[in-house]
Image (cartoon, rainbow, N blue to C red; front, side, top):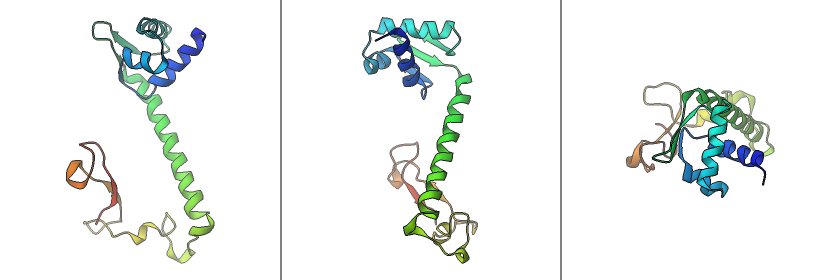
Length: 145
């Protein structure tokens, strides 16, 4: 496998991360840690990656400038999910909604109870273990009441 292909594989693997270990990359791409370090070093020198390598701990810290690219990918993903939602629930054969039901989501949201403040209905993520989540980040999606 050529060095160019390995470099592309490294970039694709590390794209969603702001921190990772050299061992993580080496394990997933199945190349020696020294080669991972060389590839990352070349990417940093060529300014294709803004990061710092901590050789002592075997870790890499990606600078915040790449967060812009990450946020754009998240926006693209969100748009794709919204388009899928529209295609399946609004345009799909089994989920046609009468125009008189209204609502931006084809009347589906109006079937959920409204938020506690009497405002519009909304979906929220449960917080931590008390609502069945998996720790402090996110959890199961449910309709707030």
